[in-house]
Amino acid sequence: MRAASELTEERSAAPGLGFPTLAGPATSPLGWPGIDAVSRETVIEDAEPRPPATADEPEAFAQVPEVVTPTARTGATEDDRIPTTTVPPAPADRGDTTPEEHPTPVDDDVAERAQIAAAMPGADHHTPLAAAVAEDARKRITLAGRSVPRPDRTRVLTVANQKGGVGKTTTTVNIAAALAQAGSTVLVIDLDPQGNASTALGIEHHAEVPSVYDVLVEGTAIADVVQTCPDIARLWCVPATIDLAGAEIELVSLVARETRLEKAVHAFVDEREAAGERIDYVLIDCPPSLGLLTVNAFVAASEVFIPIQCEYYALEGLSQLLKNIELIRNHLNKKLHVSTILLTMYDGRTRLSAQVADEVREHFPDQTLRASVPRSVRISEAPSHGQTVMTYDPNSSGALSYLEAAVELAERGVATRRTSEESA
Ligand code: ADP
Ligand code: MG
Figure (cartoon, helix red, strand yellow):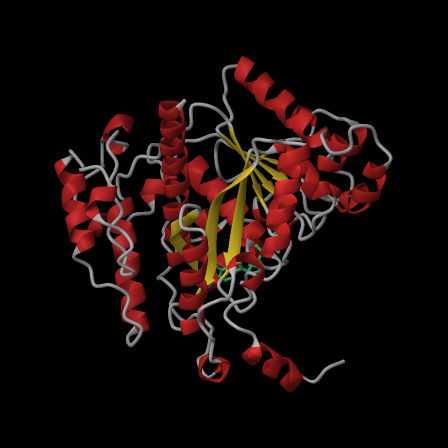
């Protein structure tokens, strides 16, 4: 066992953020001592949770406080509340967005909100509390009345990163909840024996409950094991129970062991489509390993969604993940690609978070979402109440960030499809 001081020395000596295996020498030494002097505990949390949304008010938009919403929504029809125009995100303080990148909004209110948001102060690391409050206000303003396009065919995303504790499960359930609240139909497949996604969605998953184990090992149809999320309409979940812990080994001797989840997902999606209820998104929450369960998820999906924690060594092992994705693409699923990267547990008060974020954006400029998720106590509290932060505290900075990320994910899917159709 090595002493902590030895490890610290080793870290200080490591160049940059552990990128060398990916793209040559990294650029920035990290200066651990200075960073360690700053507490990483987030102190900024919003006021009391708002009451739940009313039946005629979509939850995703109900969370925006009336005080910052120029359009009175009371009595509005569904179409009034969800305009077909989209608001361009306000330029972030990073300066990496330009007005030309976004379409000009045609709706006056929407344009006005974009202007107000653009005029908000950017993050100032000398006054982190004020910056965080300003950032939340900017998000509320830009997200108000924002339309969330539904894809015209089912998007299957595998949320993967072989590191544990980077926010895979948190990202899966909150993005799924945000998309469902905004009107999409979403299926979450919990593929981690710990069953954390099932817990966070308030889904029963004790040992006797039919689960994804039955789907993978027994060949049971997803329709026979799927449950609906009690808090959010249009959000479904295939739970994981402790049985799944043995599935890695049991799968080894089964026929078509890598494609069992894919078959089940496609059968379910087709069946729902035939019944007139298209599933817009399937999000698969992977375990922190690259075994047969994760391979099944990669074969079932066409997109990989990688959450990256804004911490030291965040990118360690990422090259292994990318190599595995390449292997799957070459042998089992040529559609598979990394479509989305989300920076999680971002702490605006540390230079470390900003450095990790900058390096990730530099290496994956097209995949990394502009939205990032801050470290937030509300996000980590929500699962113990069997909820996502989207219902537990929809007005919190964590919920706003996940909503922002979900909107971006949805819009990018539509934009990517248009581009590929045009070039076809
Ligand atoms: P993974 O699925 O990759 O193992 P989790 O999503 O379970 O990671 O997250 C690991 C831990 O970090 C959990 O306790 C979770 O509540 C917490 N967590 C995740 N995202 C955040 C965040 N943005 N702020 C605070 N805590 C977070
Ligand atoms: Mg997990």
